[in-house]
Length: 212
Image (cartoon, rainbow, N blue to C red; front, side):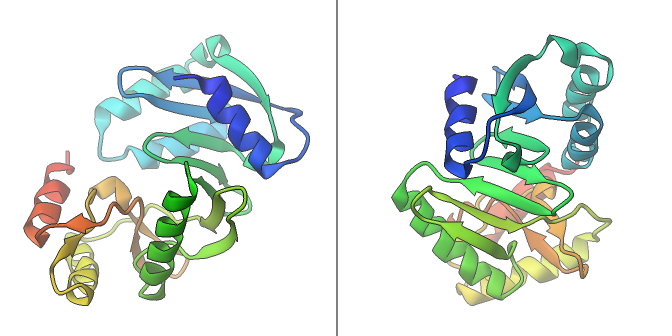
């Protein structure tokens, strides 16, 4: 993973002076990356994100909280990218104070598909609302969602809204507990949609397996 190319690329897209130091932690095995400006905020971000995966929590906590972050790689990026940048299947940066998330897409086709899908889902409070979009730079901003104590029954009732909308022909595609969030009003919403053909049972089996 060329972290300089990836992070430098999104920094150019959002603009602003590249005068902010980010520390970069890479998980080569899973091709994941996290970059952060402040260790405390990075821990606040990571802990709930992996609340259903003990091993992931231990891994990131070990590196972020025990001083090993001093051995992380460093890079100068635009401060507009916020507090934490997370690179996995998607590239997202989180401004925890402004409660905004930048989402970066790889190409115009991905951008158009993602925007159209998310606008439709957010109408039914199934996904984060879009705050801003920039088709030229291939990124958009969405509202920051939160982790909460959500009952399994509430999750099932909410995802059923989606199944009813699509006549049970499509599924979330990557439904797991880490992708179940709440908005400021307490509405259950889902992130990281990978909509594809399938049966609700496939989604629910994956959701159950994600509870550890």
